[in-house]
Length: 128
Image (tube, rainbow, N blue to C red):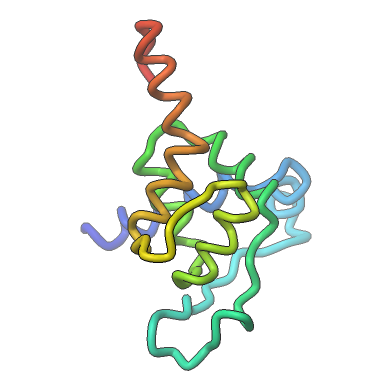
């Protein structure tokens, strides 16, 4: 029972990251979802060979999400290794040290795009 819930959660995060045009193409059958393996450590793929998604698209997808957990899930679905995450963070103008961990990079990306808004709403007394 846990597996279908986890899969649906990943699909939900993915769908929220689509542009209106991409969602429309998917709904009309002009596009389709595909399941592709994510390259993990030890896969033999070099960091410079790993494509980094468009930072503006990532930023808009993340700002559309309503929780840090959804943001973490979304960033993980990008399948980026540490160098790919660092490149994305640099493109998002997020400075960090070389010693930052993968988790730290993900947290910083999410905090810069979602966390500030959640904090701001909490300060003003609104629930996110």
